[in-house]
Length: 356
Image (cartoon, rainbow, N blue to C red; front, top):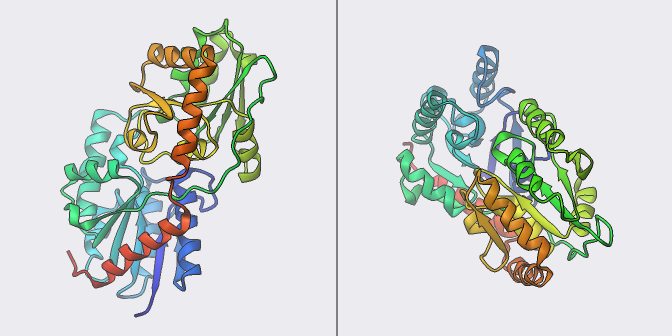
């Protein structure tokens, strides 16, 4: 059997966000296992492509050879239902869904309806659907995807040194948030939560792109200025792996107030470092963060988030208990070789599956 496939991934392949890191790690792992993997881009602007992007996507897909096994990242696949249907017998589609597009924050009701209908139609053309968490697998039941066509392949987590803290000095806690600054990640909510904790000694380090959602960045930074927290929050932008590892090592507490996560790779990294976690009961976060390693509050609830942070700051003994839970959870996290093996199994099933 010829083990070859094409990954169809829009945007910047070298992006440091979780979805792209996942895609790159799987491609690297498959190549190490003897697969011939080609990476192609349908273009930029997804999931809201303009006419030029759609034309480019058609040209890229038309150029794929008959019978090709194509792993299509859901960021583009979910908004290309006509193309997916037209090519469903010529190509072997495998949809890779990090999280359903309609669950992105900041969408209007009309946009949510449009994306849900589009992605539902596109997924019907896939021979297999790969998701990154059991939570996303459950979410796809609303999209008409049969559970026997879904493969859960959770991301791997690299081994990380246990955090020693101290990144904010001897008398303060270093809070770390690792996330692209978009509305879904909830940075503005975090700022409001911390505004009520001005009397505590802490410093927040935000690591993540400041260019993908300028409106969300402006709103979060304006909120920090309005609340008088400008000097207590550092907006670092993106870091490479080495600098990010140093941030984890110097942190005392990890916080991620997302409205939804398809898995939450930064949360797994925090657990791998033995960091106590404060996050939200949203999407796959409830599967990723065990109850003895962190506290999950309702998404968007600044008061509840602030209360959890206050308790973690004020009670070092409790914080140490959560850190111990994080270290236990770290021993159960999958590695990337495990993820690649499961992804390969999904591809082999897709090669044998009939057209939809």
